[in-house]
Image (cartoon, rainbow, N blue to C red; front, side, top):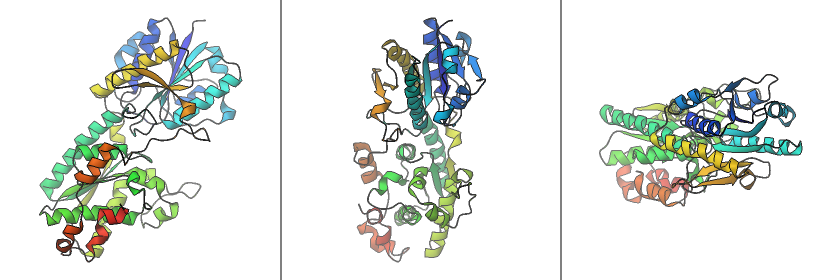
Length: 405
């Protein structure tokens, strides 16, 4: 039986997935392998009858520029009891290529260990994908999909900002990000939003709705002092990751709850939550501002990849073949700014539970320091007197006071 390579995609979509599938398939087809695409991620891999699609040259040649994924995706996280060697032995699989984020990488790591324990000699190489940019790649190297999602986010955010200027409104924008603020920071910094709120900012204090709303009002009043009645703020949804269920429930927002009593945040717009709480606080303190919510989420995930990600994903796909030929396994493929391919072993970036540790925004890094020190607009001591026109205690809305910086 011909040797084969299997490819699966886990988690949510990100621009560039098809570019990776295409480049991996083309380079292995050229070397005489069968290329098997597994639909529905790990769920499909371990089903009794996996939904497998053979990827030929025509399909691989056609999909590289498309958004979305030619292989259906799944967030299914298999238990160890679901693992099996059957698919790999039945199809003479020599390499499993997994495309995904930290959860997909962690599961790939578990499968790699399982197969080794059961004397199945195959290699496993992971391609790091997430628009959240939160996988622990070497400094300065993004996860694929991030740059394309950021670009689309910037396009929308710039339009929103122009709407704010035109209509005299404020917009509260929320961006995906789980526990990391890379996407919100990247979009906000590129569009010069007067306020950017990410979870990493709160390294000295607890993240609370009160502090988040205080930061927004700080920007609103600062711009009022400058004679500007409009603006926009962007907030990473990652702030919710660090809040207790009680704090979320006590917000006064109506949620649905899962079987364990946890609020189902996926069923409600995060921007809506922040905007409602902002309007309530503005009314309480007597500041008249009209604000509207905008959610940046699903509309960023399946756009066609930009030139950056098309090239980057091609390099990653070819890099899979390079690492495979070197006998590498249990690793992520990385490509630096000049295209140098290197393995990043999963066991070197996992915690004691086998979970891949997320990469957060480095608040001491040069870029965040410049943006947060010089790019934001908020009340400072020199504004306190003028701010008293709007606020009884302006110092309570000073960003450095709120965050204890």
